[in-house]
Length: 474
Ligand code: BG6
Image (cartoon, rainbow, N blue to C red; front, side, top):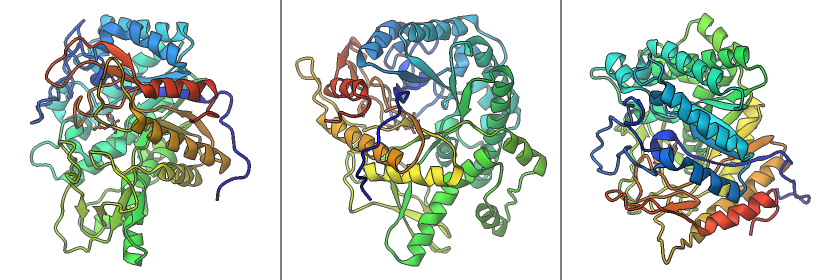
């Protein structure tokens, strides 16, 4: 239903933009920084190189001046764990100093920091020693790092996010260091979910103790699932996908309960994933202040009977449409494409209405305020005479913001919006071939060139959106 009354964005709405440390900072081995699992990655695709990326580490003052001119109210960035604790244990004062300077510069310019504590980049040494998030040992390391961030930066940071997309990292284990040899992937997934949920809860409790006024919440990636047809089997498949990918982790993080459907599914296959009541109680006691979610696209699910061959989800490596690998989870669901939607060159389906649906589903279920902490279009941009005419990105963002406004009209409390990304950065799966930023960075995957910044057309457009508090979308 379209609304007769256009609902406005709240006056204190956080118009933002987002990045993550390993994708934007560069300076991977400078000023005492340790090696993270991202630095250590040996992807077969040559683009994955964290040494320079967009050189934000050295150019953050210039970048914050651009944020100011864009009119950003808030900037979401992550703190590189290995700058603060290079080996997980020894504090590196130079790392603390860098983020102090960054936060001071933001504050001086009236830009509210939103800090992601964990964005896929724990110390490699913890991965090598005990498999990273696969081990409970990780919780104390994460707590030590987070507590330091609260003590060092909490006087100026009023918004924290704990772990970025804990639900997606379990789907794509290589994102965070991979499954240790000999470990079953499903068992790994549930152990990592458990350890992350406990880490999330302990960090939230610590934040409450040290910074009672500060707001903190978890972050998930949400691709809502549509049934491939109205056949009840497909509707069930879509429900299964939502339950497994999104509601199992969020029920745990927000309600301290394990989704019984998921527990039973694995029990039938001989895997007991029930958590001790004491752990559930601990998680439940650390209710978040909000749910942050990243939304790029929706999914399609079709029935996948128990006898079908399993296939793990993949991604499109080269930006040639049609190269995306859809998952097949027998007994649950199989992914498929959506004939009603346009898609990006990397086969990410473009679905603005899906964002409104996602807002409604999440708020209905959890009754917590929501923050959209990533949303954007990855594309090949061309710099022509110092200009980038990214009209396709404007179209994407415009349509998504219009749906956010409708979601507010539906009664969903939305706190902020952080398009991905503030500036071009190294895409996790596709390097600089696929760009997201409002600002073009002059470099290619294999040539760092001069890294000069250029405002894209979308920059000027978003400037107007922010200045009008979302009233002007054209
Ligand atoms: C999100 C991640 O899931 O997707 C980001 O939090 C990532 O780190 C973004 O960059 C877009 O994905 P990609 O693979 O295009 O970089």
